Image (cartoon, rainbow, N blue to C red; front, side, top):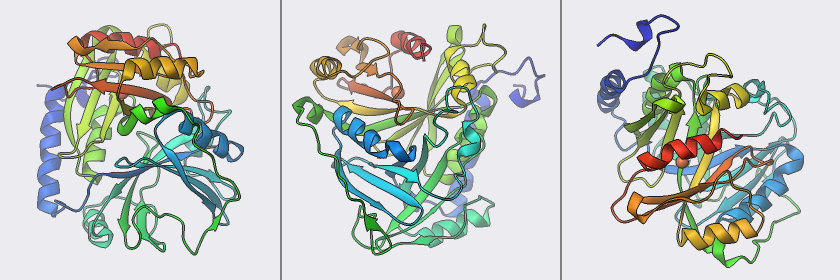
Length: 367
Ligand SMILES: [Fe+2]
């Protein structure tokens, strides 16, 4: 089969055969490098927000998910607010007070310019030995932003924002109290956000997946790059030709969290003919589009969220016969993220049903 990258500019399209072959090579390189067991599951996501919106962003997440407030603290340059839910990756809101934001260059897009510091910046994965991980990865040419940062309870390093996705991959080794990000080098902030008393929020559970939108041409390199940094692998993809969209799923054995890359099949040509995925990138740039939470009693939970004022892009779609139910909120004015509520029925391990992926992708075109 012809190398997709060798086609002319107007002929490029994605196909899985080449990606699968390259993914196999990356897995083999990873094995040979001795990375097995050195990168684990997702510990946290870091969401950058505008400084004046950090409390509002926390309050919004508390009233739309099962997460609770844990801590809010700062150092001379940055404020953080940590939200937690037992058994799930932490959500860390981050607002810079001083200093340059390395993600800023990804914000030069029509629907982002007003909130240039707002984006899901970093996926943080756990490692049992950060120094060993870093030595191996640097030895095979992978880049990181500076040296290991040493804190009271953890060591951490992260990549510079990656060109294809505008996100960073971070790696954390707990050396003290697990899950405790503040320490002697930080001061508590004088506020906290109370969890609203809304019992249906108990139904909103673990962070199930996040979906990153990338340009059609960047699909393979973005997935392969993610695989080189982590223990994840390309699992499967679903093509929706009428909408020029592919949903590509990367998973790690034994991990709850999946990272989804959504791209066009063919590149963006113009606004009139673009599908919703390529149109989103034209408006927002490559970035994380949504974060999804496993939801119990999803029908009543959806109704409760709606009557509580949460805006949705579409109705609740799917059902037990189709394997899952899911709904997407409108874009948050605090995080620029959409929240997805998802419930899978017995034996189903997908992210959508073939019949409703088109409907859902179309719904997100309203953004
Ligand atoms: Fe999703």
